[in-house]
Image (cartoon, rainbow, N blue to C red):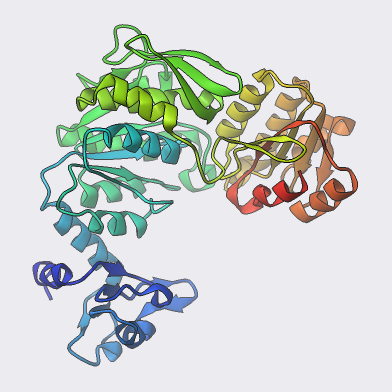
Length: 427
């Protein structure tokens, strides 16, 4: 079946389904494969549960005219997503970077929806499956699409651009994330820079942070849309982060936020820059930033019965960990405690990067330093008796039960797999 013919069937359906545990009525089911499952085996079950059609890539499962046989299910999903994307003549803004992608995406969406009907990536659907699903969820009334692109190896962003075809884009920053997959920091630059390469080759527009020397050096654009310095396209000024970021917008308005961490200033600045570029009223844009409330353990400040928690444990890498610690160190608060856990996917650099965090912590004055995870033993070796080290989260939980922390401001930061948010019940 051609992609054009499959698209005609897609238009008859209510949307896309990929999991028989959550089948949408009259949806188009794609039988994706994983390391431990074969979606083809669930095609009939998907139809029985309400799917209108199912797409498979093994002939043995194409047992009736509601089951469509293709060469490869995943690539077909991506091709269908591209076919759908090409029916739109609207801005498609791609967002990638080592840190802050999701927060930036949410801020950009909050600003743009003050004037436009927008559609932005939901949750963490920012990979080779999530991006096609995002594209296929865009409805005819959408005026601007905002697509988040995650990556952990080279040529990944390039592949996403081929079927997303962004017209505008930005890289939040370049940091020491997924070093194992990218092959070092230069590999990160090359991998994330694939967005710049695509936009350059297709006359796209880029939003460029002129205070980020790495991004400025990577940019080959003649007319980037710049922020946040004076004389840039959009100008705003950081005031403080005590504990939330305050800034002065271009129109002189002092804008309070609910975002902790000075590192989020650039994410706010680009959202306001994009708002100005697309003609969003400045007052409405400033209001959107002031009202934005972070979710999903990203730069959130939460009050418990006994403590104030700075929860930034959705993910971590050496760059974001350093930024979080420096911001927390500069925060005006009594009895500050840090709970930091392992940073994943660092490959051969893991021991050195964790030790570097120990060296950084040794320069800071915190009431307590609690290190969690096998890799954090390298940081513990640097800090010696100035920190408590726990082999895993469960051991730290036991310690917290026996040694309750009260009247403190506590930072929680680690990679997603550490699930440090599960400690919140003991804080």
